[in-house]
Image 1: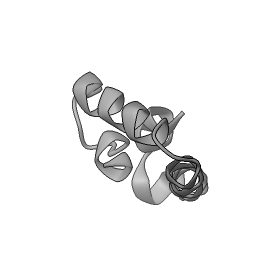
Image 2: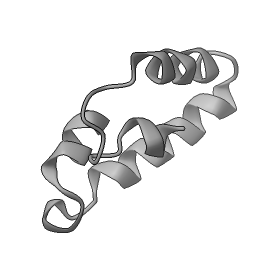
Image 3: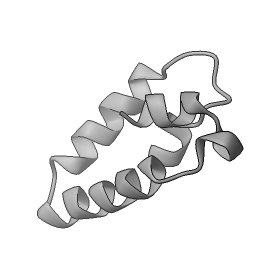
Length: 59
């Protein structure tokens, strides 16, 4: 879900999906750790390959 929410090919933010991710992260400590791992990975993407929009949506 995080990958979809931060996909730079989207024309705008999907707030329903973002809120679903927030709810998931708040359920368990393991969920938060998993989400953080995915977010860190997304922030280290090459902007020339994946686009700045992907990184912007991740932030």
